[in-house]
Length: 316
Ligand code: PMV
Image (tube, rainbow, N blue to C red; front, side, top):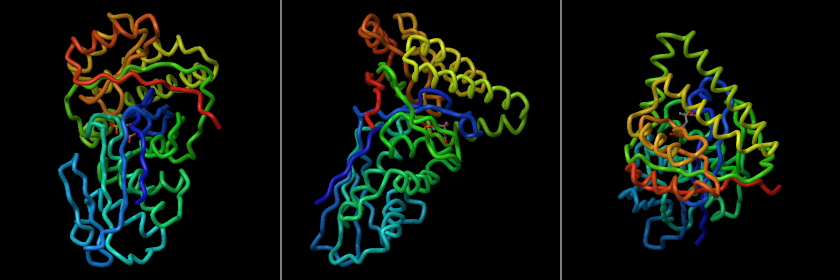
């Protein structure tokens, strides 16, 4: 049996603007994981692959699955990429995930990454990060329509990335670790809907939206400089500024605003939504002084779950 896992992710800066070519910064979240196990299924007919995803309440047979079934899609793509290895016996691909769905934590990308890696390991043909990221990108299109590529990149690379659509991802120096509290509004928000709404508004008022995307892109550039130089205290102000622009583009929500206000009132130097918005998760910068107060304020304000994660210097 082979096993592989992949982390969740948060977008620290630049969501939505990244779809329109501006830079964004994302980091993996190791506290939540997707795992895939591949084992031979002697009882199954040759060449049959069965995907079992108990957390999603799904069992998918590859031979019967529709073209737009994401679990089947990543299996088909990975097998094709591996040169269609012959299946001596049937295979079971067992998928587990602790990453909440449709909440901006990259659950789809993490599941696909774990499946691609576990299959590659089964056939003793490990894939590098860029190969995994590009396989997962194709499957992400089934969830998102036209994703920027940031989710599959940060999840497959497993370290903080500075990402510009269509360019190779840049990893960068995290001079000093910093901590982020992540709180779930409990409101499911499919990325496709939030991204589609922004596209409609951009089509109706391109000048204004290009202006807003420029402002968000500038925040990402300044945030990268702050992270690289260890000036992590300034990240709070940059998160607040990014959130102002996200409000303007219409992707915040009353539930997100309630959690953001609670985190800031409890001492967080900055907070913003993370991911597609309109629900899903928000993030707040925390430190030793405010962490406990922020976490309990988020619970009191109705967060469904709170995770505190470290964004660390990545070891080459
Ligand atoms: O998958 P989510 O919810 O983290 O959203 C992805 C970020 C967006 O910028 C909104 C979309 C994209 O494709 O980059």
